[in-house]
Length: 273
Image (cartoon, rainbow, N blue to C red; front, side, top):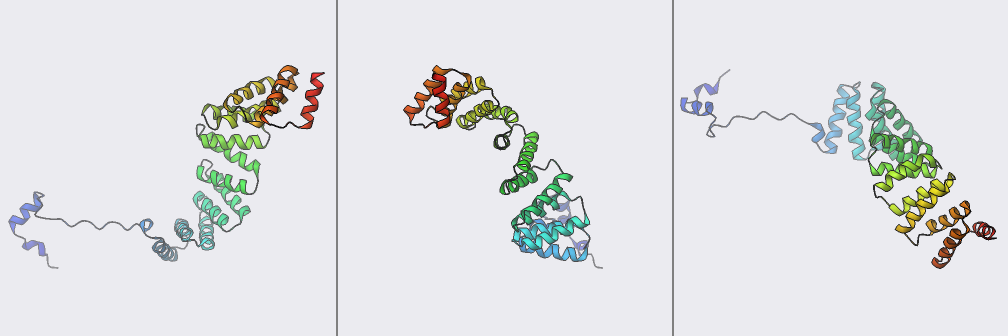
């Protein structure tokens, strides 16, 4: 083989050795990154690689991602299935399998895939959020409560998680658990009037009428014309047997045009006698 560089003049070689700009070195060719390519190129690349190494779970997973990005959800589902067949503890493949099934409209299968991903990686917040979303779509509130509880435990200062967890506890009637979560939510200044009302309702539902009154009076300062808050105060004062305060709260409702239920009016009338 001929070595062309051996004929370079000594002066040029000297310049190269001293790193002067007169001599430019050849850059190494950058390594090919399939993930930096367009979606069609990624699909072709991983299809070729899978054909060469059909038992490589990671290649099937990467192919599934590219197919999912292309909108080929059924093909992505098949690729993820291959990935978990070859690597049963591939949490990300299970998580994206759940996403593919969700896009295909099979919510029950999506739940199963997300749950399996969380068995492998319990602290995966993305998968917990995705599972909570599907649980809400299917009105599986117990599963939603579990998901938001896990997210809240992972990020106890995240106001979004605090709000979602409080709301699902409230909806399920788990008022005792909801109280400290609502207190944290209110301390964070999020939807203060609405959340203070719900905190008061938690106390009222647990028979903690004094705490309910204190909470609702605080809420009334924030939203004086709020109908649920004003009705709640009538009910709480009736429950404590405070006829004068109950009547004052009822008169306030009348002035604001807030209707009271017939049963509450009957209780109010009985208390006044």
